[in-house]
Length: 203
Image 1 (cartoon, rainbow, N blue to C red):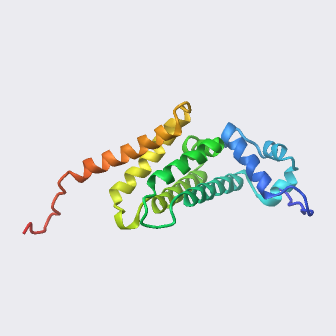
Image 2 (cartoon, one colour):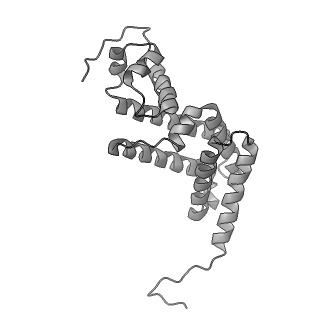
Image 3 (cartoon, rainbow, N blue to C red):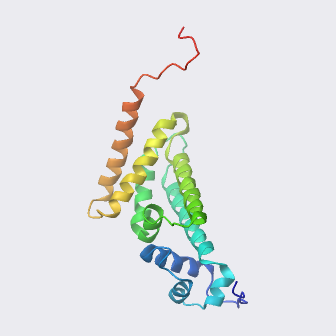
């Protein structure tokens, strides 16, 4: 492992490395990006970079984690403070705005899945954190239903991935499509009679 450098006051730090890592991972993907290139983009030496992150995989995890937190903070700031107030539309639009402003994060979240087993675990764990966080933020607790929540999350992922290749479509139209998809799917499922569990009386 490279020897860690001592950091002097005022020397470029962690945030600068994270931003450079985000941009390069988003532009080129994990495999095509080197630590040396990230250091060059950040304007620091490799030894300083290794002071903050011990490996490229560790930096990737930190980048994905930071963007996940920033996304959830953006959505949390957009939804009403009243837990019973409608919040789905505001939250979906905040999510889409974040992606439009951070295309590198957009690509990392929805397009570039790493191949290494360890990084696949990281990718899936943080995707799960985003899904759980969005579920908690976008749905009214007293009206929360598992099927509806899953459909909203599915719609957000699917339409956001599609929008990456169709950015001429207005954000409002994409948000409408997500909400329509979730509502139609939920009502269709809700109308289906539920089977009676085996071994129980129907009376």
